[in-house]
Length: 187
Image (cartoon, rainbow, N blue to C red):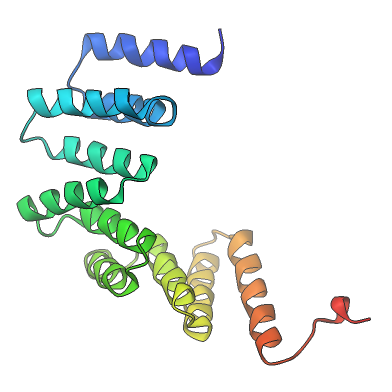
């Protein structure tokens, strides 16, 4: 039996046991969003019918919207959560991600800054803010943020080679902008 069929069978049996379990429904919808978005949406609609006040269902709908490229649906879902729980950092972060995808960078930065105010040590949010700076063509600010994140991770004993590569590529791009050419590209 292929792995996807096994997962599908497992999720189906778990849903039969506990049909309102948000975590299981979330994984089931993630699986079906790739295969059959209409079936995934039907499952979300069914969850809303049985759990209309459950915040987790709105998260599932938001993730489904992002997975199928319906950013308006995702945005509406996360905004409903924020109406009910204005300081929900996960919803702020998710809505920030939607705004980033929509290229509404100022709103995304404001939302991620709110998340960072609640979670000042959240390195992932700091990294996303640096990526936002890059998306807005502010490479020097982004470089400074990436270097600060790398120093924090090194101090924690958590080396991140991808961050080092990201910093190096950014430094090379900055040099290229100034007219320098790396030695390995010279003729």
